[in-house]
Image (cartoon, rainbow, N blue to C red; front, side, top):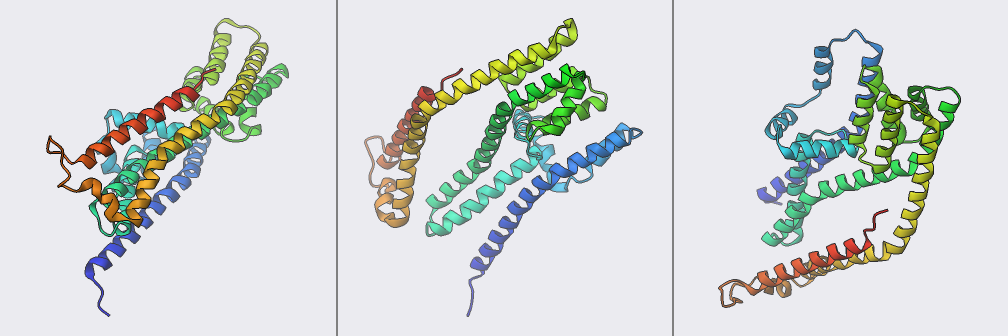
Length: 332
């Protein structure tokens, strides 16, 4: 039995891409514990020089990652991506994230090419989906982490308030939060305490926390702590008042979300439905759906009517999606 060399190459390339994606995911998960272990080692060995610390952190960078980082270094995309990765608590560099996007594009392009009978349309669809999959995952991880943090904030304030009333300093109260609270809030305050032990001021450490967690409620808490450090006052009473305000805001947000969930999910479903129907028709009745792309179906301007129709449909679906999201988006 003779096998087509092209088929063998395609299968080998497919398996290589699967291994690459799995390797990136495993690397991201393992780097979290490695980063924490290194920071603990730095805290224990205070005699380390700054050059030694930088060399330790850079030792594990592969040549490919270093090359990709150099290509995107200094760009606005790199800065935005690094900030979003930090907010989502994904231990990746912008170069690694870019490599993951390329791998997903190639991987899904090959998959959809075989599914679509080696059609160019299937390749384009797979490439577009592969481009957006890492971004969807990043946004989902970012939003989920921010939501979990906001929901834990009232309990964190209650713990800090009780600690301060018991005689703890602000730093000791934060350290108690890092020990007693569940993630992600314990991880973030553990990082704040570690930064302060390394010599970073409390104000800068809290500003770094706010950059990682862009929450309005957290901004209110940090402002109260900074004001109390500058002008004095009863910090426990201030935090208790803020905690009650945040709890009431969370309650109102929950009620509004319950009332607007139907509108939000209706907008998502109605926006995805045309794509699902078009994909099903492309797989089940390709000749029927390819009528959109026939060159003989031209209008007066010499452009295929199918492309114009699909473009108009995409614009109308996008407008409907954003309008329904705007209706459901009520700020508290």
